[in-house]
Amino acid sequence: MNSHTAGANVTVGDKTIGDGHPIYIMADVGLTNGGDLERAMRLIDIVADMGVDAVKFQMIGPETLLGDKSVEYTYPTLKDGPRTENMFEMFKGLSYSEEQWAAIASYARQRKLEFICTAHYMGAVPILERIGVNLHKICTWSVTHKRLVQEIGKTGKPLMLDTGASTASELSDIFTWHGAAGGRGVVILHDFHTAERQEMNFRAIPYMKSAYNAPVGYTPQGRDSDMDFMAIGLGANVLEKRITIDRAVPQNGHIKALEPDEFKDWLQRTRNLETSLGLSTVLPTKTDLEQTRRYFKSLYTKVAVRAGELLSDDKLEARRPGTGISARYVDDICGRRAARDIRAETMLDWDDFQ
Image (cartoon, rainbow, N blue to C red; front, side):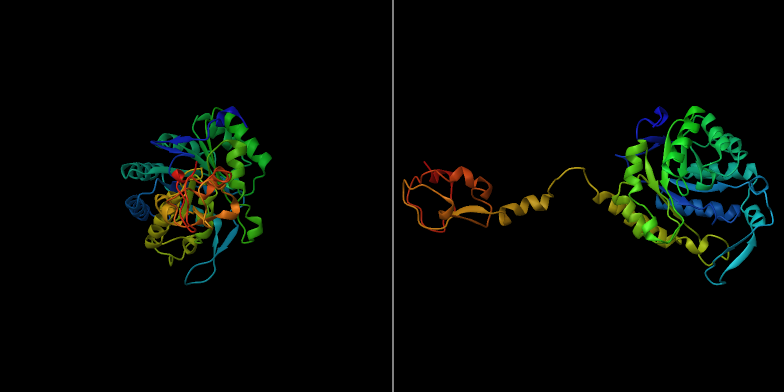
């Protein structure tokens, strides 16, 4: 791994992403804002009130991105079934002017959110720099775009990327391009586009954290929360989740998003699960410690023992409660002589031995 990613934490604005810090929560509105400035601001308000860390948009630039502007794309909708659109026109509908982008970013910051925006083409980087982003993001379909990665590197800012179609060696190439150009810090998001569970490869999360010494998160493609929660258990530092004002909006991406009440519930469950991760050690709870006196076992005489008689396993038993000599000390008791006559079924005390 290159030195530019040394240190597993990455600072973005006033927050740190990495082990030892809260899971960084990004609300994805890249499709669900619909290119509607009013809706974009409303979504920012909704997620800001919930307490997420960042809101994520995407700057697509369809004029540059698409070589073939006749391509069509079919996607599901909640009430109208499959819908087919010209991809160029669909992406144009998600576009804003630079002034509008600046207003969106400014409002997000006003609401104490980090503004994150996926750059799909080279021209997005200078616009995002003028807006003043603290981190640049690319999606998995840009991981081979060497010049885009290098352009981001020139800013000296961290790079966040989705793995998706990348191999381990290709990830290393991206980090090299970014670091050699001047970039500092990488955040990796485990990403895939499959419904086949055997292909989802969630063990990549702890592997990448170790192999690349970088924060690793998970970006899901749908509404299922089970895999989000599994990612938490595997040590994810970032979680991204799509939100919409209304899943019934007949546009791309809404059917796979959570509505505000659902997102709020998901966020609360995420924070609760995160709290339960605890420490990387073996540590009993306060309740467990309190109950040891009741449920641990103490040493008892199994039979009557006379003064001066040697104690041995056949004369001892382990019984509840755990308020006497712990059964763990049985080897310290065996071979010692009784200091007095002891009746059968008596909890032993250290004063009972010579």
